[in-house]
Amino acid sequence: MLKLATIAFMTATLAIAASGQTSQSKPNLPIPSRSQLAWQRLEYYAFVHFGMNTFTNHEWGEGRAPATDFKPTAFDAEQWARIVRDAGMKGIIITAKHHDGFCLWPSETTEYSVKNSNWRGGKGDVLKDLSAACRKYGLKFGIYISPWDRNHPLYGTPKYNAVYKQQWHELLSNYGEVFEAWLDGANDNSKRMVYDFNGFFGTIRSIQPNAVIFSDAGPDIRWVGNERGIAGETNWSTRDNEGTFPGFADEAALNVGDENGASWIPAECDVSIRPGWFYHQEEDAKLKSVEQLMEIWYGSVGRNCNLLLNIGVDRRGLVNEADAARLMEFKKAREAAFAANLVGRVDASSTRGPRFPASAVNDEKFGTFWMPREGAKTPELTIVLGRESAVDAVVLQENIALGQRVRRFSIAVWDGRGWVNVSRNTTIGYKRIVRFKRTVTTKVRISIDDAKATPAISTIEVYDTRKQ
Ligand code: FUL
Image (cartoon, rainbow, N blue to C red):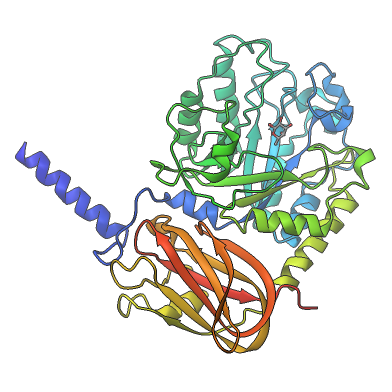
């Protein structure tokens, strides 16, 4: 017994040392895993809906269209990857199988796949080309397969669980590293399928332990609760997930997380650049405007979420010109808004010593951070701008490796005589972008009004996003 206790103590001490934690910067549990932290830093990546629906002009195909209906005329995964990379996105998640059950790779689990189409004489494999293109263009590669399958003969019986696991097995074994496994919760429930979700998650983990698993209920990444791309103004990455599973989503709760949630399950915002998820020619003039996309950016990346922006690849097997052009305009708009960080000097109401200086919020390193003195839960940072300027936005980041801490904060600007409050907000998390009335000033003050533990702030940036 004694020996066991000693070993347990040593293990705990080693774990603490390995995480770099000291008595001066204890994590406020729960905290992200290494994969969740790496995932969060991606911020923005593409969803691609492509499959049988592209050719039948459906959103939810019934799984009855013949495999030969799948006939891209100029399929080129490298074109997708080039556009996605040029748009500033960090990866692609492909719908390898949507609800209609048609597989974009030659799966052994079904006859309903590319192998029975005439595309490339039945020898084509979208997953093979796309994973190679992602590697070539330095993009992460992610996979969506719908649990709900309207074609597979075993769907609705317990045996289907093995089919679905086998599909993950094929996909995670044959196409290199996968950063995210995406499990859709949609289901018409008519066949009363009882899914073995824990078995699915176990299969994914056992083959690619570094992939994060997305579903309505995590376990690693949660749905944000809507398909508009907008997170709650309050957005905790912590969540109480007990008893929830994909397909039965409490949308309001997913949108904001749980302040005292026991698990780290940050949210992802999935939204399409067009009205539908799949390509439909009649939507060529219905793309979201740059202004709408900027609102989505502020509502997702600006609210502690990652943005999974969908493009529907067209019947040629190419990203349509209209989508490509809009993605580039959106990138230019972001670059213009965040062109010049106006932060000059940063003063803090207190500092926990030389390892956590106020200047860390302005050193462009996420790993360094400012902490006020132990126990100070309402500290302040005063940002002296490099020069007098109009300002209308502040970007803040917490060092979430230590947990998400800030409950409320406010922003004030100096009007020459005193501080004028311009914004009161709730959570920060990995990244928060706050916009307020454009004001000319020389100083900006960030006040942490309430926190679960002593704040640990990695980044503060100040912008004039509407400068022409
Ligand atoms: C939903 C699906 O039903 C849609 O077709 C789409 O794939 C979206 C991303 O998820 O649940």
